[in-house]
Image (cartoon, rainbow over the protein chains, first blue to last red):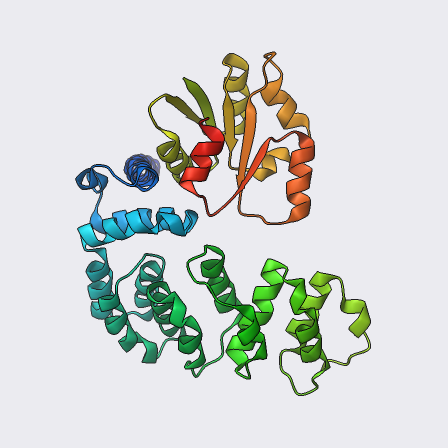
Length: 250
Length: 116
């Protein structure tokens, strides 16, 4: 009896594994095709836009589009914008985010939205998430505003009343490095705002802007600055940490 | 007809690169593993080999030699990576890689470097 039950369980388990494997293979095939079609449309800047979303569920299509958007530079944004508008993907993500009761899901949907080229109408709706109780939702709402209005990025960041984490700064720098968010580093380093200065220090470190050495050194010498450690690490990256090794950082 | 072989461990990245490179006058194939890459390079002469895996070159010149071993003409090897580290780039070029392209990709630049 026990042996029979074990055999039945094993058979059912094997069948389930085969079904799951087949479904994931089918899903991967559909995803591959969608990504290939999107990449071809973006590269050619034209094509059969109706065919792009065929054979794949709409939300899954958004994820494929975000995958491509993350890996192409800003010159590809115009065709991506056309796709987003044609398939009405902004309203899909926003409506799901507004209906969702879970902060992690809202944050994920806003994260997807922030990686797509969004329109002005979206910015107005996204602002309501800036006061959300979840820090991740607030941050990705801010990133969505970055995506819409890169030239107002500094003003939006300055108005934030919480401190950015290193991970947040890293995500903003990823956006900047795609060329979609031009931010001059000098006003950031000169700013008294913690977030802006933190972003400035990490920005010059990421891009190896050694001309900012003097300003970074002044942050290290400032005993009251909370960013001395970050500034010293940046100087270390520039190969200048030895000069400041006698500074005491508490 | 330009013959291109694409290798990436990620099926999504493979699909994206193939989608960008597929144009009239270009024949694109893709492989899923290193063994398949070396095997396909030994069977057919490609004009370009596009690789999205810097770890392939951890053994120095070994992988480049395996890709170019079997024919007298050498396919041009183009590596894609998100790393901006100068040492990594120099090491790859010293191994014998012909081109190094940074992510995020510019589709026009990739086509210009690979398809011509």
